[in-house]
Amino acid sequence: MTHLFDRHKAVIPDWVALYYKQPIEITHGEGRHVWDADGNRYLDFFGGILTTMTAHALPEVTKAVSEQAGRIIHTSTLYLNRPMVELAERIAALSGIPDARVFFTTSGTEANDTALLLATGHRRSNQILAMRNSYHGRSFSAVSITGNQSWSPTSLSPLQTLYVHGGVRTRGPFAHLSDAQFIEACVADLEDLLGHTRDVAALIAEPVQGVGGFTAPPDGLYAAFREVLDRHGILWISDEVQTGWGRTGDHFWGWQAHDRNGPPDLLTFAKGIGNGMSIGGVVGRAEIMNCMDANSISTFGGSPVTMAAGIANLTYLLEHDLQGNARRVGGLLIERLRAIGAGLPAVREVRGRGLMIGIELVRPGTDEADPAAATRVMEAARESGLLIGKGGGHNTSALRIAPPLSLTVAEAEEGGSILEQALRSA
Image 1 (cartoon, helix red, strand yellow):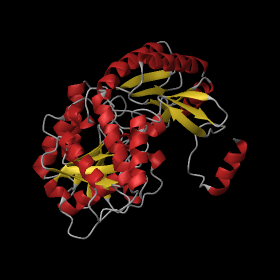
Image 2 (tube, rainbow, N blue to C red):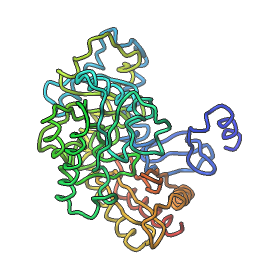
Image 3 (cartoon, one colour):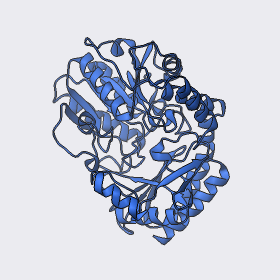
Image 4 (cartoon, one colour):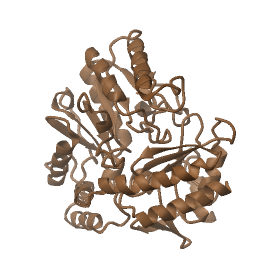
């Protein structure tokens, strides 16, 4: 791979990060496994950043893509598109949002861009509330609402962004409080913040922060926020790019852990729905989705090929109850990892739900993040045949575990054993 690595460095920007000291080229996959160009086989616990949702080379998806490509690959949104309408109907029904409309994009970044455009246009305000430690994409508007310094390369912004407490339960000024007190303190912080600003367009929040290291507030926080937001007419955008489609096991959407006051006004999605095909989108109330007073289309959003993949993938997900599998197998895996972590002073916390699990590493005897240890564990896991990811807030010191939702109990046990060895060796 050295030759390809050299070619990569010669033509790709330095800021396009690669995992591992000796990066690997993944050439093919099947089920929950992938192979590199040297023939090494890996159990995939990261799924192309939570994107291979059901399985690698899922026959139902590859067949749908091949058949649609054989008919027509591209038309744009200027023409009626049967696969796009069919997938939109299914997503609208699943969203929980009444009288919903769906707009397809090619990525989660573009989905969040679109949601911001709609919210600011509808509310006639460029002020946005976002969560500390958040990540919403790499575009100019998305990095301007990203509360994670490692992923925000510029302070220039088309938006005025105000950051709210609550996305990280076990760090920060409210970490010592009970769950109920934590929610109460975060709501008080939101109320105080709104007393110092003009009209705000929307709050955007990930129910579980992805790049931030799979951190989450207590269930019900965003429902409590919603009571405050509604009094001010502020919209709620739920960024479900990583939490959607049943990955958390307990719920189909992450927002459903905070549903006491109803669904969000706008919901963004991407990643898993395409199982590797480039699908993103926004679903929201018709009043907001229809607010655009200028022409707008998408050249590649809603492509017949990607829509065919999305329909096949969603059908497989629902028919095989992969949300239930994420709950059952993910529950076993997280308990196994918590038992391992309890005996290791470098493991500060094992957190998450379903097949969205984070392991935060610190320097033993301190509360100080240890990104070098995270890198060592990732390298050791790869050498033993397991691929995982990483993330985190002030320092990238959380391991991210997010296998395809079809993970078996035997594969969870295998991955847990490799992780235990890697954690002990690092």
